[in-house]
Length: 189
Image (cartoon, rainbow, N blue to C red; front, side):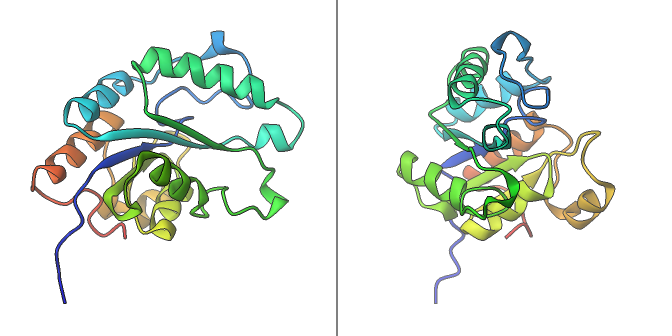
């Protein structure tokens, strides 16, 4: 039986609270503000030869607060500010819809991996709440938690062995892992 650790081929980022400032139910591209280090993190991943994706719950659509087109325009603005991401995937469903795509379920991670042409096991999901890490686990990927003020302290404690202080450090860990260093998100599977 092989004990080979899967290689890292892609980084999947959460959007709100990880790459961009979390503006609840934002449908206005002019309100998109990158978080510190976000563009550098995406650029580092790309320079390291890693595919990139954003996987984001957007329940405002299912709640009737946003349209699909508004989310796409916000994503396009974020993409422009980030310097380009390979794949954007979002769940439009309300939390009670029971869909397979809403994080912490694996659907968004699986869809992004499929669209990138990589195995889920070769992906690392970087996000700011437990749902991001749990979606990674459910899909067979690894997860890294990047806590912020909205992250519950219990989540930080629960995923202490799979945390990074910020998104740029998280990508540095992923790139190091891709080069054969310490596994990114060790213990996050």
